[in-house]
Image (cartoon, rainbow, N blue to C red; front, side):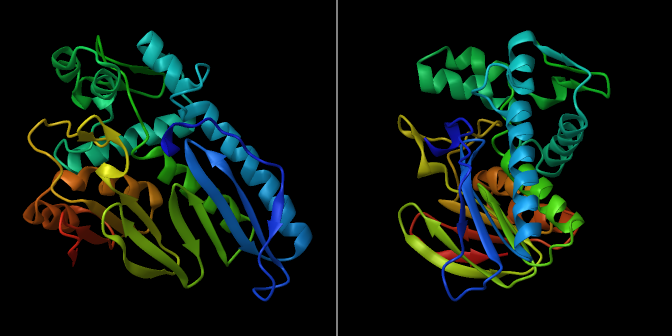
Length: 294
C-alpha cells in the first residue's frame, strides 16, 4: 500500500545516469506513504547541501501529517479531537483544505477518514458516514477541533503540499532546474517529460512540465473490497473517471483537485476549472481508457 508506509529515507544519493550532466544529482526515498525523488542540477557541494536540507524537511512533514505515526500532529488531532497551537504548516494547509472544499462544493473533504477505516476494517459504515462534514471542523491559529466521531486524512493533499515545500526550498537556494516528486510532481525549469498512466489502460499520454506541477489520482489503484480507495464524501456516486490528472502552478492544488474530480461529471469539471484561480489543465480517463482534456 504505497500511500500507507512510514518514512524510510535512505541516506544514499545516486548520481544521475551518465550523459545527463556531470552536476546532476538524484535522491530517492519514502515520505507520506509515497515514493520520493529529487533530481537537481548545480555545483556538487550546493546540491548535496540542498538535498540534506530537503530530507530534513521531509522528516518534519512526516512528523506533522503522517496518519501512521502515532506521535504525529495529525494522529494526535484524530486521537484527542483537538490540536492546540498547530504549526504554521498545519494552519496553512487547513486553510487550503477549506478553499478546496468550497471550490469543489464538498467533493474534497478530509473528514472521510472514519468511512475509510470502517470500509477497510469492517466497521460501522452508517455511523462513519454521519461523521463526514468539513463544515463542522473548527480551525484557528491557536486550535483545531473536530466534531465528535470525526477524524481527518490529508492524503489527498499533503503529498502535493510537501512537493511544494521542497520545491520552494530549492528555489530559495537558487536552483533553476529540478524535479521534485513526493507522490505528486513539480518541475523547476524543464521541460520534464512526465507519463500519465491508468491502472487498466496503462500509459495514456505524456506531458512536458516547465515550472508547473502535476498530480494524478486513480481510484482503482488501491481497492477497499469492491470500492476504490478514493471515497465520495457526498455519498452520491461511484467514481466518474478511472484516472484524473491535474496540472497547476501548485502541487497541493493539483493534488486536491485530482482527488475530488474523480467523482465530477464533465460539466462539474469545467465549472471547477473556471472557478479555480490560475491556469489549470485537467486530463480525464474514462472506464474505456479514452482520454479527454479540459
